[in-house]
Image (cartoon, rainbow, N blue to C red; front, top):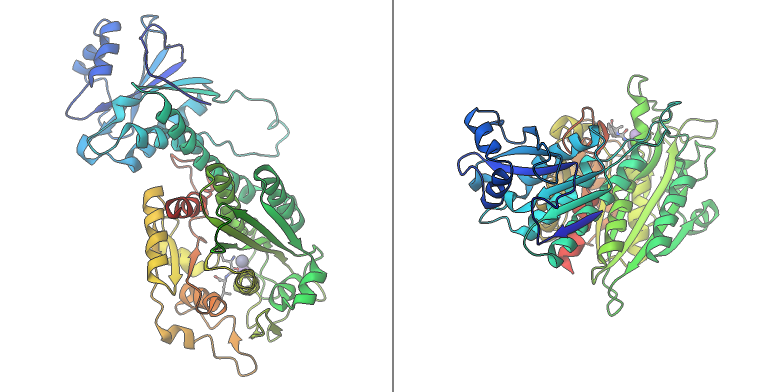
Length: 496
Ligand code: BES
Ligand code: MN
Ligand code: ZN
């Protein structure tokens, strides 16, 4: 996909489109002046005529009349150079990527040094271009009669710059991160009937096979033997067998230190007997967004090969209603022996994650990060912009927030005062109440999972709002976002 040309002339550029950045104040950088010269001063002329956009990310397409190799230029306005960072680059290049996609362009180029600032290096820019191109050209699969016709898609991107080696690598790395998010998106967008827990396990197996990860899946009998009563309780309302999916990447065999990712893998959440209203129930095919994020991260980690160990645990089930489904008031016994009164069958995520987290600890997790589309309350609090977090360890929390900042995926930590935890101990028949009420709903849900993490450093990420978007954005179409796949991978890679 990516290639770098470090010794270019305007004649050789053979792309359909060359993406060029222009600054608000500084105007054309040297390489753009070179283009302008080859174009006989047309760019200067267009600028004089005020033909270039004035808002960051806006662009205009300029036909090159055969004067240079590239057929057209996308002249992208980048805004103020001193305010331009990786986030802005991702955004601007994504806008161009979106347009490449809609115009079905197969070969594009990027004049990389037109995007550089004092603080944004060529290497970081190359990474950002790779990321932006993969994210913005993601094609959402549909099942319409005509949707399987082959379409032209972007296949070659050439970065024009001075050096080659490091930049080729960085652009490919960036692309890998974007593709990890795209794997998560793909899974979240699949209809519930086409992605059951069994299918999710197959998807995980395929990733494990590609990257030579250890892979194992626990079946219902295994769960019964081990005592995973919380996951089994949720699964008993469905005809689809539950799965506990395990994957392990061993990048540092010299140590048994291992970070565990635990992803909520509800392939459909109808709410159970505490049934959800009809209006938005169909969106609950995406209730495995946590599992998808973890799988996307594992794919990136498989490509990046950091000197770190990562364990991936995905409890997966449907939450439906049949004659044997769990009922409000039922008491379940989780893997670690704690009992839970199911006050609300729709608070199922924390139940399956309880067993997932307890199992990750049994497998030796030194620290835990769980990811889940857990609460509607988180959507109310933070919308689809920011991922909510609850943690028992400030250092781990800070590292995850930092990884999110670098990735452009904001994470906001909720408070975790002891008073919230007390709200979980309000069952007169069991150790825990799975649904203590609306007040502080995202916090109590997170802390419920924290009870199972015990003293192990732990971060909970609630992606109920961020896992999908209702409108198209620069980084991709409406629907799944693949949020946290890149952030989780970034966290691991920056550790190692
Ligand atoms: N999967 C839902 C949470 C959700 C809501 C995700 C909206 C994405 C968008 C979760 O299982 C759930 O139903 N949570 C309940 C918990 C309540 C019953 C305590 C909720 O948030 O209403
Ligand atoms: Mn639910
Ligand atoms: Zn759910």
